[in-house]
Image (cartoon, rainbow, N blue to C red):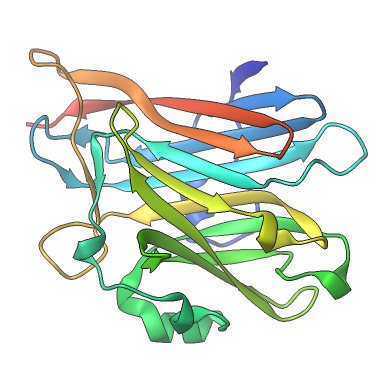
Length: 259
């Protein structure tokens, strides 16, 4: 069952990602059994060239809610496919490695990989067994351009002090494929939460102007047909794998031809 509604996204206060997501007007809600997922995202600016490309910012976020008193099933994997009109260029930004930032405090991660920073975000989790938890209960994350198992990746690093001081780096592996939604970011979450809890919210705000080179990290064009000044298109499709069940949600957005 799918429906659209307005929703103010709030996981933790005073983060770059929350400031961006709070401004979003539409979200997609999908539900199966006793679990509900709210997925939303934005593309800025909306005025883009028809040919060529311009730097953009892309924000995506999800919230997982249990519809009963029992805890929701654990999210095992999340994949976010981005429209092919958008283009990532990992070569435009220095590469950060897992060894540089894991384990590490936020301050040390930024010191080691500041030039690789491509965005920020937030996460929220429910810790069931503090003594067995391998991840913090919530906080701000920082997104670094990196590689994981030989593939381009966004390394989402977060550090928290509750229930105990802990750092964790979640790699979103980047792959490309043919079709309208050509760039896919995939993260495996089962090892992140272990037996000690589950993730209830996650957001990323990626800044295309990152890096010092002439080529932007993230750029896009407006996929409007010739003769049309605007276009409505599938912006992002998220797949949430809970093990025995899978939910999918697609966001539709619009753009205007610049110039």
